[in-house]
Image (cartoon, rainbow, N blue to C red):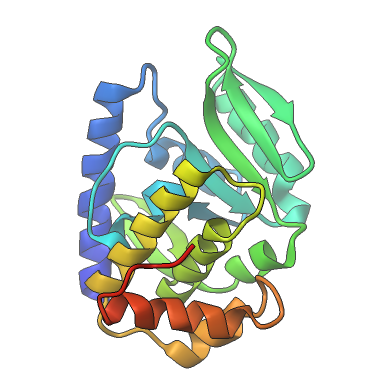
Length: 213
């Protein structure tokens, strides 16, 4: 897995640079990681920044996403607001959004781990070290499962679903070794029977078929 480590670190740096050009006052993910590590918060990096080792593609993103354990959630918010005083809390049932005071733009999403799927995501991880910071990203199977969940979410917009599908397709194409048994088990946390559909979608991509959403 050393290759994943190197690819992730390299593409995280590229993604951070690209985002810096495209998003005004963007907060680098490693700064968020450093704050959470210093506060001894148990978390997993999520979203586009977490996928760059699995998609093997760098891209810009508007915010930094993390999921934290329930018992560390308040501590994470306190630490981040102290470190980034330009942000203010916009709390929701599923996520605590830290927004820029002036623009209202979301800079950091702290996902609450009340849903079982995110509890599982905290346990199915891959460690990465970048400079002096060590942190965790979702394992390949977990990353695919999370994208699958987003792709089929009834409350998600079509444009976001198609973006999710693009990430899913890239991950399948860029990673020949996918543990289908593990993937099937994780898919059951999305919905009962979801494991079968998740594996079928991997098969569709591998067969060159159009991914059905």
